[in-house]
Image (cartoon, rainbow, N blue to C red; front, side, top):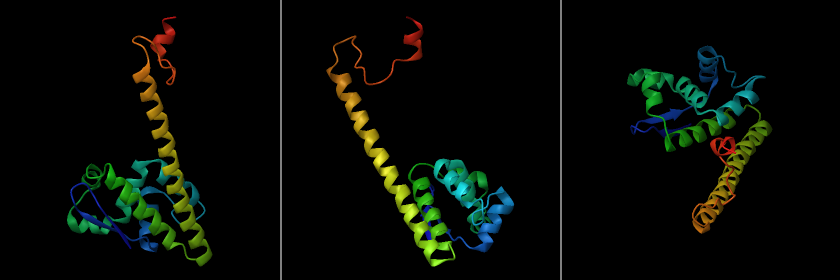
Length: 157
């Protein structure tokens, strides 16, 4: 089982088992373990709202004990809390996989997702630094040429 803290400081336990997978399916119509799992996995990585909905369904028994509604849960999920919760859920999903070879493959996929995200962030950091350097060295009124022109400036031509 993995844990994460929301922005109120509450610690949540992420435990993916058959009961949690059934709860996600029944509450959200998403299949964490069957044929639809690859598409759900992609949605979890791409959509923080779907991610938090799934997390709430997984953590629902704990939320019920604490009197935390899905709205309360959502309000406490932003920034680092979402990143830590995502990692906890993805690692739990990988660990839940019943077959040892499939489990190892799922763990490699999770690691690859995070490695790709870091490479993407590095590339964006480099592009941002380049744009800042170009803007700082451009003559007053001169465009740096790094970022595309706005639609307003294009329409005015």
